[in-house]
Image (cartoon, rainbow, N blue to C red; front, side, top):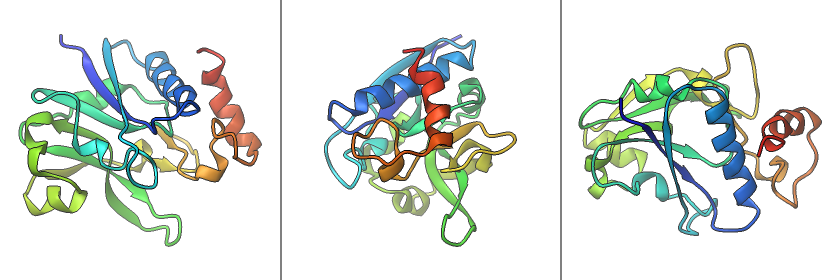
Length: 182
């Protein structure tokens, strides 16, 4: 069985190293699968890794893309098992403002060979390369509930590893559970 390949988008700065370490620790704590990691960041966009998701470090084979602002509670093998030739398999997430479910690209399971001409989710959809295959339990944005498989800490002003963040005791406690393992 081949290793699950995971590439993590991270801002090329010192404080995101802790966030990446927590992502890795949370994955390894919740799977028996062998996992190969790569960390990518280019300093672009509002996050410092906005375009990285469409530029995996591998030109062929499959990979799972994750932002560095997540804690993984589900078994990453579930994502890996959904890979499809010629596709990016995305997930639903709930919009904070409208509470509407929308298709998204993180986490994403991709055939790395399709990404040469893709820069956005819109490009993936326009070229027929996108498929939404996971429910919102794989991208719970700034909230955790029963069945959560991935907690996405998207509010930069509340991210526990960010030195400028304001305290959120509930989120900090969840994050520190994995930070202490690093």
